[in-house]
Image (cartoon, rainbow, N blue to C red; front, side):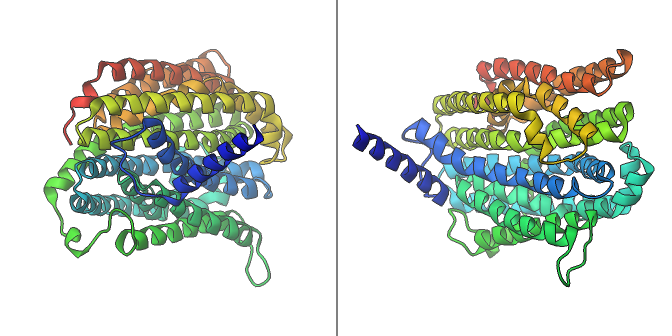
Length: 472
């Protein structure tokens, strides 16, 4: 019995090692469970690394003087950066869908060419966003409901974060290309590199050491942007010079407007899909700031960073569904694509159920790590527990959304988001927070209610199966 258990453990470790190492395999044949897990392990680790960015900043910033204003600055800036994240995710989603189809058709050269066209598109958008964000940084904080002291303390931080949005764009986009090719391990490794640099630089630039001066809040922005930039350099090396399944060569640089148009068609609705969600989160952040002021805003932003830490790994698993859908539809296997999504949704629901229990039982000690202020802790704990009530639904819903996106059907989840966020979440949050005078608590309740409705609608539309007929 002991020998059998040892053998099972050895096989499990060997499997995980192969997934992390990134062995190339055909995801259009063989065991679906193996395919899901082989893709999901590095994608989960990749998203954990992405979420670490926010937590590392929050940890060090939350222990600075005037922490309610520094945390509010980070939170409000991140809320606006979600628009840039939305564009980056939209374009990376399109890149994943197009690259996965070409790989599924066994046309790796065309997959690399499509990936380069997506990079041209992403760089163009991010340059515009960087300039606008840098120039209007104080106005952004003011519009978001930041208090005068928050604006004074945080303008430079916001300028650096918004001005460096090109590295955010490329980090998301190039990882989308790797994921579409089935090379989830490379996407994971680039986030590891970026995060290790951020973790080293954050305490050095925020608190100073020896000849390095203490930049305070500004140091957090410098560390994060630099870390992401180093991660992008790592990606580019492996995309142009590495041994990935895709390798971009000189002839791929030529602009191909038909392909760019195809990517724009998918990315525009994909971006709109996430902007709809982002605008809702921006509205909620502002509503909390207005009804609960800087303490409630800091508590809410602290809770959201912790929530994101666990949501992003689940999003990583849902990315596996997008890759499997794209490649299997490219290989003319729609039934296998559907089975892959159902299996991934079950695994994600189980994971999110465990996370929900952790949050419900351990919210207080988790929050205490990130802030010393008792009043901020109380708000954050309440927010964390209420939001966690819908975690199982979040897990299933994000898999369904990414299944549509992986098929190139970005319109369906876009309309679902219009209903769930703009027609349900925003009005419900406003009514409970303002009309019923529930303040920030009303905002917190609106989140799991709307996310549950979104998941139910997404599942019904997924079962109808129209996504299987989308041409990319």
